[in-house]
Amino acid sequence: MVDRVFCIDFGSAFTKVALRRDPGAESTLLASRSVGVGEVDFCLPSVVAVDRRGTKAIPEFGDRAAGLTEGGGIEVYRHWKKLIFQVPGSKPQVSPLESLLQSPELQVLATKHGVAAGQLGYLQQLVAAAKSLIAGPGGRVISAEVQQRTIAASLAPHFFLWLRQQVLDACNRLPATGLKYESIPVRIAVPAFAHGKGFEANPGCKILTDALGKAGWPLHPDTPVVSEPYANAVGILTKASNVIQKGRIRLGDMFGKVPFITVMKSAADHPAYRAIVIDVGAFTTDLAAITLKPDGTSTSDPDANIDITQNSVPFGVSDLDERVIAALPKEKGEWLRKATPVEWEDFRPAVYSSGKGYRSGKVGLVGGTADGDAVSACLEDLGKRLAEEATKFVTTLPQLPKGALQELILTGGGSIIPAFRDNLLAATQASGLTFVKIHGPDMKKSMADVPIAKLDLTFARGGSALGGTSLYFEREDA
Ligand SMILES: Nc1ncnc2c1ncn2[C@@H]1O[C@H](COP(=O)(O)OP(=O)(O)OP(=O)(O)O)[C@@H](O)[C@H]1O
Ligand SMILES: [Mg+2]
Image 1 (spheres, rainbow, N blue to C red):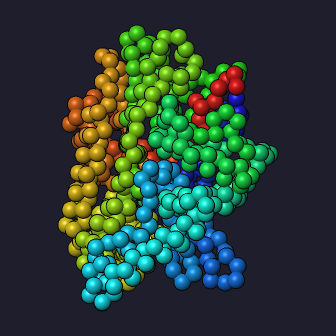
Image 2 (cartoon, protein in one colour; image 1 turned 45 degrees about the vertical axis):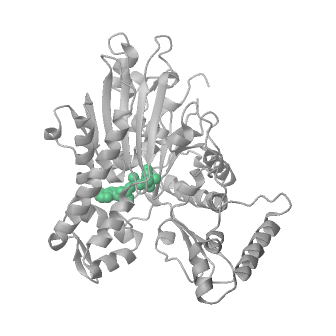
Image 3 (cartoon, helix red, strand yellow; image 1 turned 120 degrees about the horizontal axis):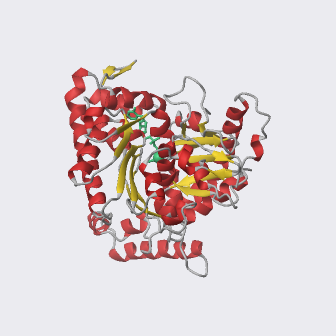
């Protein structure tokens, strides 16, 4: 068992890091961000930028990188997590230039400009020859996806080196503990599709763990990687608590009275437990069902009896952003398109959640009463789209046996948006699912006729990082 651990939840928009500083200490999020920037001090923008304007390339990270605009010698990499996990397609890749050269449109243009058909043929041959020259004797051409992943993989060690510095600085601001934070190992949370049980781990996991190693983080010796929704569920259900007595992990105390422990202890009456986790992120919505079916023999290691089903939908808060830009009056939309990520971070809660609007210096109040109808239509539209995805997911899940206990966890920054959260609630309940408890941000008792657990920002945004450091993922005998 490892006594202390960090967990990194590497989000496509924001990275969150938590620490369990002693075996039985509560897991805590590390406030690594300068005070006064953005809304939440434990969410660091996962942005990397390279400034090539001078003689030397200068890398920038986090808030500084997020404040830069692409172009004129500056490269900004915002969504590189996606590239790390993207599995190159099996189809042969045709570059955009090749498809242009082979297109009927180009032939029409060539005719219009009097270019002889043979000349166009020579041009095509010339490009093909150049391609095989670059590819070398084997003729293997590197696909665009592989190239993108190579770039993303080369950014990773730099990002984690910078992140490590932010994290160690944050640790050194904690009340003096005498701990050597540099030697505490790290675990990273990855999408469940990249780490599902029974699947071969996605190469992205290796890229990230290698990068962590290069950045000088010691990896957790047994479980350096954990699935995001699994960690999220554990963080939320244990409320980040860790309990150990005489070297024994007390799962009963950590999970308190939640149904998870009821099923572990009395499988005869309650043969299964399922947590449905819906994490609405910036670029993806991850829907996961974590099912525990104790086999009656081993109750000390619930993980052995856990199954995860998950679906990752390329749809999230960034899609709402695009829709709102298009729906606003032209001047305001233009302002919003150019807004910095830090302005966006304040804009989203003010417009999508509280509806008050955001006061910009340039174009006045954006998303306030005057724009109310336009914004509401976008929220409702995309809320419905989310609801459809949730319905699709829950209706294809394997049926639970009679007596099973089920909980719903709505999480991720997007779940804080009332229109999204309410549509998800309605969809899961309309699909005939029954829950013994629902966990979600800003929930009120009247929202459902089952007990409600209100998630605050710490859990709605930091659940995966917190859960990833849980004693739950430690083995007593390891
Ligand atoms: N109160 C709020 N109201 C509206 N939007 C919010 C609120 N809080 C956070 N968001 C937005 O929710 C989005 C998702 O945040 P989150 O931290 O869950 O993303 P992520 O984990 O980086 O993304 P992904 O899960 O896709 O990798 C962000 O765009 C964030 O700005
Ligand atoms: Mg996330």
